[in-house]
Amino acid sequence: MTAAGLVVVGGGPIGLACAIEARLAGMDVLVIEPRDDPIDKACGEGLMPGALAALHRIGVDPPGHPLAGIAYLDGANRVEHRFAERPGRGVRRTVLHRELARRAAELNTRVVRGRVAGLEQRRDGVQLRLADGELVEAPWVIGADGLHSPVRRLLGLDGRAQHPVRRRYGLRRHYAVAPWTDLVEVHWSPLVEAYVTPVDDRTVGVAVLGPRPLDQAAAIEAIPALGERLAGAEAVTEARGAGPLLQRSRSRASGRVLLAGDASGYVDALTGEGMRVGFAQARAAVAAVRAGNTEQYERAWRATTRDFRMLTTGLVVAARSSFRPRIVPTASARPQLFGAIVERLSR
Image 1 (cartoon, rainbow, N blue to C red):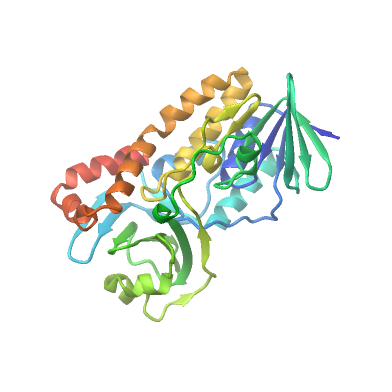
Image 2: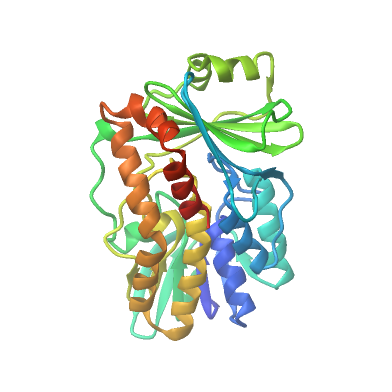
């Protein structure tokens, strides 16, 4: 039997952020994660200024490429906004994980390699059963185990699944080419969006979002401006996918278990602020555990994710509608509105 003051299920960036927040607060923390380091994931890899500030607050400063803002392009139209106060940073997901894991280890965070197979709630705590039969007990548990969260499923908190026809997925690869801009470029085509993020001086990441089947090479070829930039560039990583992107949770807490990050519910990657929101959730979840108040966390979760949920949902609806071809032209015609939205999401 293993015991801890707080168990965090999931050792990805948000799970490690939860662990670091808890250790900084003096709590005894155990992270349960089945995968070996470093953990990778299909994502855009652009850290908004607010996400970078959240990392700095907990003592993490991952190397990467400065990001000055965001640009939307659809061939004939372009609109861009440069962050008003401070830059963001393009960071390879494996690099981000390595730096978070280093900081967690520096704070003497315990890590167990295992997969949660069972969960039993008690009046004063939670007992977890791992796949190998080991039992783990703690007064509180935070589930930060991703889009397809086993903890969320074990709690019976999975929300209604999206209709297959409406599901969106992500596919990401890295290319050995020097970044041609210090912006995240979002290229819009009739069916997909391609996010291009500089992650170091010699590499860009390209994440394609859209319905299945997703073919990244075909998507890039269908965007001439991007195809020309990547012509002859070597793909230095294999394609990595994620989805369906929309995941619903009926609640963010049940008993003494809280959900954080993608496990707590996710809309889409379109607005690029998943990490900023996730780090805020990690801080709020640990604060609620310390206060022994899950209602506090539910309120904080709703406040933290409100802009993300509203704006991203609206953009996804527009992207699936007849309005899709007008998204970039409309943003180009109203650059101040575009800039205001980017600023709101990036803080």
